Length: 399
Ligand SMILES: Nc1ncnc2c1ncn2[C@@H]1O[C@H](COP(=O)(O)OP(=O)(O)O)[C@@H](O)[C@H]1O
Ligand SMILES: CC(C)(COP(=O)(O)O)[C@@H](O)C(=O)NCCC(=O)O
Image 1: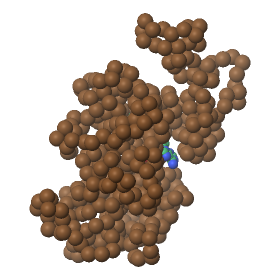
Image 2 (image 1 turned 120 degrees about the horizontal axis):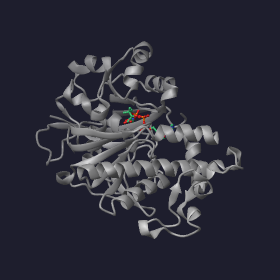
Image 3 (image 1 turned 90 degrees about the horizontal axis):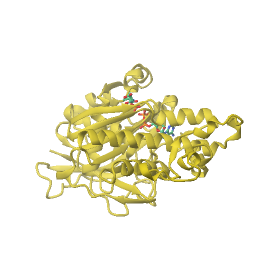
């Protein structure tokens, strides 16, 4: 993947001090999170942080690779010496830390031998649902300007009150979709799921449009018009609304309904229209199932993660509108800037309970309004698609 080249940490050729690496190896993508220590001395922790003595400043980096191109990922780890460590961990722990890395997702099982063979490293497996929840809670509590709502084309960051975070429904849209009721740190239940998710959009979209990459398929959807292929209420009701049951003439009555037409073949439809229709169908369906699960448990807040979303306006809009429509405005859809990295962050955080339990890594410094995302100083949190290789400034404190 082009953007995942060697990482430049502080703009010069100083050797990188990587202190931790964690992976989420999913059905479609491998996500990496690693911490690099800034050059310079350790610093004193903020006064309001009790129980810690010193801290290190650094950056949390994010990168992703297609799982099908796992060799590129192995090469990236190797070329950037991500397994060497030597950052903030205690010397006596170094050997242990270097002999395994935390990994979650199905690929942590599937590719275990490959990592051993190619990098000489064991993957210490962490439960995927556990990691998703830990990652989401971490982002919601520690990272400023992380969660936002999206309605009528505009993003609005949500200030999270730590005392009023739970319960919420976490919907992770990866290859498939998991819906998890979160009641606290480590307190959760996977209440539902659907196999119609990101893999479905990418898979069906690839077959139907011949797109060669996910980005190409997504780009097509920008230019498409789903009305060319979806049957609308108006198509069935002679241009009229069906207001008695709350349906306007422009509501989709049947996704891909027009494709049943006898005298049209696949080639008669524009790939961009197909992509848009597919994206709308899948996003709408996920929004609706999510709302129904929120309703089951009386949850008002639904937080969507997973790389399917890709901060794509049409996807977020469709999901948000579905939640808004079905809940009659009662429930709210929220999205996360680091949407695709929940599992990897959870695996990253899981080092605490094992060999690094004298470190507190939950204090990502609040970012200023024009957030510092290391490798891209022009990054606008309101506009950007956090696509990998970005980083956030953070501090890690020793207890
Ligand atoms: N560059 C990409 N290549 C493939 N799929 C992508 C890409 N970017 C986003 N996606 C979407 O994200 C989904 C994977 O999301 P992710 O959260 O990484 O799940 P998983 O853990 O199953 O890999 C894909 O199925 C696809 O819909
Ligand atoms: C099996 C999975 C947890 C794997 O996670 P993924 O790699 O898709 O992120 C996920 O694909 C899923 O929840 N699928 C839906 C299965 C179902 O509930 O029907």
